[in-house]
Length: 248
Image (cartoon, rainbow, N blue to C red):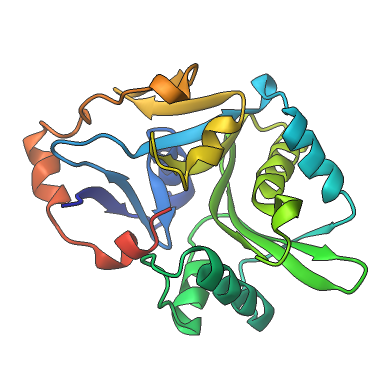
C-alpha cells in the first residue's frame, strides 16, 4: 500500500514553496507537490546530482559523443502532437505495463501544461532529418533544474539517449550557475532506476537531509522520518490515483 504526503502548489508563493519542498525531497506533478510517506518502507528516495562533484564515466563520455550532433531547443510548456507520438512510442516500448501506459493525449497535455511555476520543455532533434528524438519536462528551481519527466525514441538504443538527456541537463545547470540536477526518486535495487546511481555526485534525501551516495550497491534505507508522524499518517492515507500514475 503506497502512501503520499502532498500539498497544493498554487498562489503567488508557488515558486517559493516549490523550491523549499523540492529541497526536502518533494516532487511536482502538475499543481501538486508530493513525497512518499509509507509506514514500513523508505525505498523511494529523492535523488539529485551535485554538478560540481560530477565527473563523467567512460560510458557517459561515449553517450555525449554519440549525441553531440543533436539540436537542443527549450520551449514554453506546451504539448504538441509530435511530443505525444514520441511519448506513446516510448511507453509502448519501455513501460507498457506501467501506471502511465493508458494516458491519452489530454492527460499528456495536462502533465506538460499544468504548471504554476517556471517550467520548460527541452526538445532534442536530429538535424539530419528534423526527427524529434527526446523530450524532457524541466522545472527551473532556485538551486537547480528538476527533470520532471523525460522520454525518447526507442529506435536508438545504442545512443544512450536517456543518459544523454541527464548529462545535457548537467550542462544546462552548469551554464546557468545552478548547483543541482534533480532526478526524481531512486529505489535501491530497482533495475529500472539503477542508471541514476551511475552518476557521480549523486545525493539522496533521507532522515531530513541530503547525503552523498557513496556505495549504491550496499545502501540500505531507514524507515521514512514521516512514517511515525500521526499528522502525516492522516494526510498520507488520502488516495491520489493520478499522482501514483505519474510517479517516476
